[in-house]
Length: 124
Image: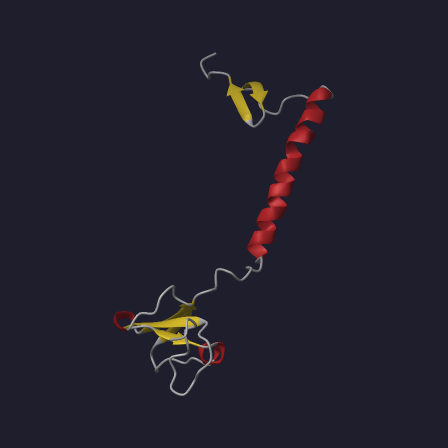
């Protein structure tokens, strides 16, 4: 017996790269990375057959990403990175303003340590 798992399709001897599982209750076919071990109710597919996979009419195909493939950054990721850079630059600007004798923006603020503030009690 060969240690390499083969495609489950008839007459296909190529090595398997993905595992197909059907969720009959949801009418869904789930195609994901090759499972750790072969199970009787799952199908191992080669690259060609996994790319050409179609489901019966009315069914949905869910393709799970391979964890080993590098994920491409989305627009949200880039925006979050830009916001983080802006936020990291702010404490330096505040320190420069405080050193120049700038007036505090919040009259309730008594002291500041990094991003933490000590506020005056509203009763005082």
